[in-house]
View (tube, rainbow, N blue to C red):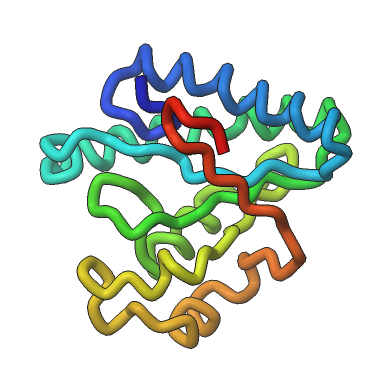
Length: 159
């Protein structure tokens, strides 16, 4: 099963909340002050259906509050969202990332962007926006500029 708050089915999103809470729990063991992750994906059909995409986006805005509250109770300082350059995910571009950050203002802990160079330079989706300068100009006040560890877990194969 895919994990992510913006998945197409409500049950998947509820399971994903557990994933995010466990990620917060893991930060306690790792002595990290935050979690960072993409929000997840949705089906191609939902991504192409503007009404469904907006409905899922709206639900995600509500859902992010729960892991933010959980993170605050655990003493974590923030949640970092990693934009991914896929049309089936959000945020995926600079303007969408800025809008998401504005829409998430006021959560129990701040939600900020964890920008991956490989993602922001992905020309097939981003085209002329595949430029770190554009991302910085658009989203700088929301981009987390601290050293971080980026763990990539391969399905079925560990790290």
